[in-house]
Length: 198
Image 1 (cartoon, rainbow, N blue to C red):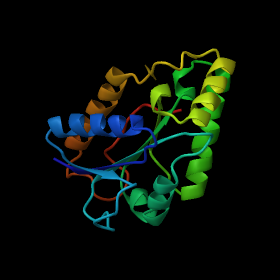
Image 2: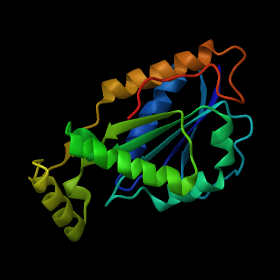
Image 3: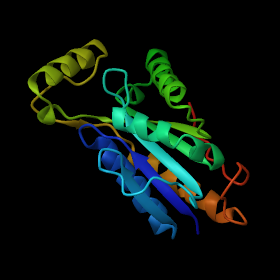
Image 4: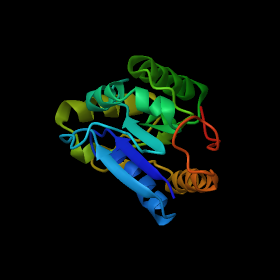
């Protein structure tokens, strides 16, 4: 049994769903998991005693949430001591093209450089087009971007692209690797591996 934190930033709620899904799977595997929304006032400031971290953020106009950037930067020493996975939620991850993969890599690299985070695993996760939740200008901009990329443009409905099965597989692999670590991982990088990466 390991103690894991799942830290997320979200704008329209899809990354919150992704983080909750990962949390639910890890808890089903008998791990102790704390879910931290970086938008909320923090009730603690230390990651001491944590065996692993999953950090999830979503991309809007090429950037991850400011609250997530600030949280990770403030706690940048802790993820360096424990196994850490970064889940990069974006619409680009839903497209299987070289240009989309380059865009995901570029955005993630900017985030890692900005925060100093060095995750063991980076997992691109397809997000959602939630047209019905956007304001007028955001809806217009995202519809234009989606049209340019050959994506969905009917702004009267929402589109969810997240592959929940793949996310479950990732979470189960993480849970298993932490369970097999003996003793439970607390420092260093041995005994933990997940094979999804960009």
